[in-house]
Image 1 (cartoon, rainbow, N blue to C red):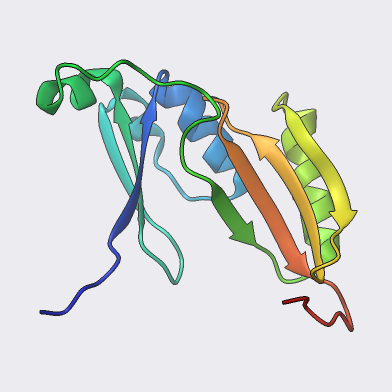
Image 2: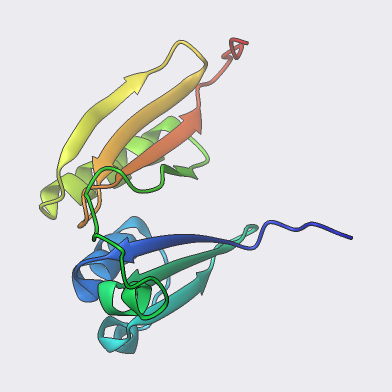
Length: 136
């Protein structure tokens, strides 16, 4: 048996609002996806990112009790340099998304920031600091 990580799935309360956040982050998601109950996007060099509406989740799990913002997956997106973290963070906050942690230089050697998506999930933005030695 060969095991391969395939996707990260998220339940969303408002598909269009959720996809708008991830478009603002930089993912290429077609506009017509806003009206779909299930959306999949191939991440660059990674697995699929999948969004499902509450109706889709309840179609196979009738007892599902709904999206509880902030209790979903922890997602992290890496950038090439610290300036990109600051730029993307600023754009997302200016677009109305909630800041969880403004950019800072983390002791483990990364420029780091956290913004909440439309469902309240923390989305981590990171880049290596120049000449940083990561902490173990």
